[in-house]
Image (tube, rainbow, N blue to C red; front, side):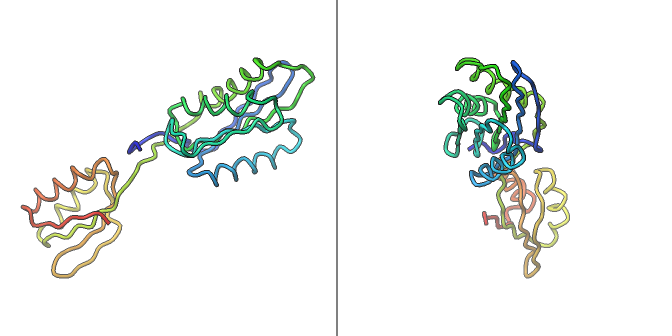
Length: 203
C-alpha cells in the first residue's frame, strides 16, 4: 500500500443535462466499504425521485480492487456501475465513492450512450474535485536522556512528526506519530542526535 495518496477533501457535486435527462454526480471520501454504503444510502434518500441512483466505490488506495462495489440500479446491466468504477480505479484518487443520479427525460440513450453518460459524469466530477493527502502513519516510542529533549523536540517537526504523549522517569519518554515513509530517517536522526543512547521501537 502506498504511504501517501490523494483522497477527496470534501463531498463534491456536479450536474449536467444529457439528451433531456438530468444527471447529478456526488463524490465523497469513503475510508471503508461500510462508509461507502452509508453514503450511497444518504444520496438515495436525498434523491428518492431520481429514476436511477447508480453508484461505485473504491474504499482503498488508488487502483486497489480489494474493497470495491458498483450498481447499475435498474439501468441495463454493465452500463453504469462498472463504467463508473473503472473511472474511479484509473483516477489516481483513493477512498472515493460516486453516485450518479439520473432523472429520465424521455429520450433513450442506448447502451453505448449510457456508458458514456455515466463514466463521463464521474470524470466531470473528478475534474473539479478538491483532494487532500491520505498519509499512512506509525507511532514510535522513544526514550532518551534529558539533555537531548530540547533538540529532539526541534527535530521531530522536520519529519512531519507530532509528539502525542510524554512520560518522565529515569529517561524522557515520548510517543511520536509521523508518516510511515519518514520513520526510518527519523529513527536514524534521533540515534545520531543522542549518540546512540536513544531507544526507539514501533508501538
